[in-house]
Length: 177
Image (tube, rainbow, N blue to C red):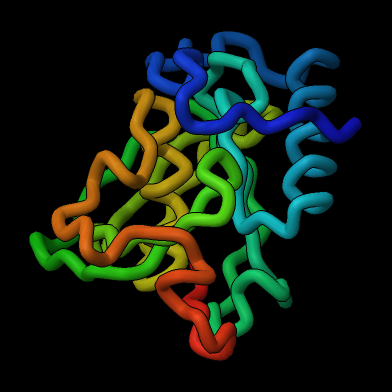
């Protein structure tokens, strides 16, 4: 089922999410299915449970070919529950981001270039990956939602934040998220 996505300004997006304590339940499977349906409907690269009003530490992400991310490398479809992120270096990279909860806007956001993420899938199977680039950016962006953070809170230079049509009036060089 496609669910409405909360938008910036909704106080529920600013709260920390609860740890998932039971895996393999019908409720968890239903939540993940709704998140998949919602993300696919909106051509998203990822979605966090708090974005649809569920305050649990669950994110999904993945990009193969997506019109919103024409230049992005592929990111495998992933269900990540109770994630823990560990930067693998201090290197930060600035990159354009957008968000389904902040529609129509883009901003330049610093993120760790390389990291390890760990957590569990919907069955409670441990998951651990070392990633970089766009994959690392997507994971950090989605996991921020679990701690009540939206990408504009990480922007350092607000001259690089605005409506897509104003920042990229030619419509040709719209950056991937």
